[in-house]
Image (tube, rainbow, N blue to C red):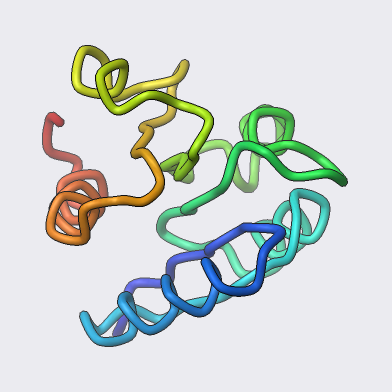
Length: 125
């Protein structure tokens, strides 16, 4: 059974790019356009992991992640923020924002795939 990843972004192109990449690597992909829809889809589909943009107009990624952590159904789902708001040098020093991981846009595909695998496998990052 394929592991399910929810990709949340308010822009169409990053959603399409992530879907193609993840499906090529045998993941099941669910997408959501924005934080509110992302929250709803996380609750209804219970993905193994969430890739989420930070800067979204309806509900930003940080707020969405916090609401997911407060819901017992989704509290254990790991989140990787994918954002252009964070500097690559900051991520290299500390690849986490709170309890969540972070990669910068544009992301290195190999790095992102390795991070996803480590997080899903529960390995230290």
